[in-house]
Image (cartoon, rainbow, N blue to C red):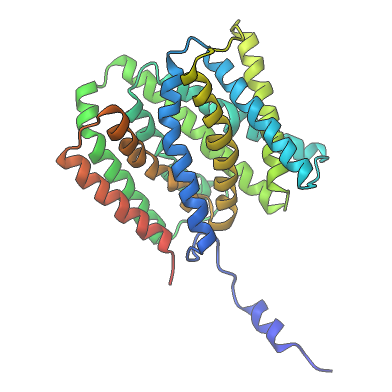
Length: 315
């Protein structure tokens, strides 16, 4: 009886892990979209900061719009929306961690830290993803990913060292850092939940849609619990930032990022967060008059070098 030697050869050949394979053109596109959308989100958040609308309510409006778009997307693309209870528990975890609490903690952290420091703390996601993937999912990082991540984090530290020294590490600063670190942990834990759901071949659009529904409900519950008023600031700045955050920074960016997460692994996808402060500074240079220093330029070079080192993967 003939045997399929090709199938046997493929069966014996170990599959390339997502975190080890080289980037494909689609990965570069998803990576660029994620970095672009979330880099600009810091400026959009700054526009909302002084609007007078409660943080929890800002998140309700943002994810209410985003969830509606995702549900329409799922219906039009004929993706299923009915899932088992086990799946909904995972979606609820996404909603609480990735689509609400993560942002809420950063909103409150912004009361104690300047916007540049917010993006610096969030860039820790690349390192936290490495640790969580190793401890929880038992996915040891490649040496390239580890070295590149450390290079990127070191570059970010150089870029913001003068600002950190000027701001000082007072009690309020430590509270702000604690809130933002907690927000980063929520983000990274949500990453792991998303990765596990994707391994079960659940449709990404439907998964995000339900996650955003649960995130909206969780933020609304917190708003009611804390006695917040559901108001809207009818100004051009507030409405434009709300639309950008809902459509670009949430719907498009999360679709790109979570797709990237399933394709290249949480460690390398999380490294995109190291790039956010860099491009956030470029936006700040154009719109807010940020002044570059020698340390900032050196840090930028180190971040870009680390980024290239990570995304190249194995030859």
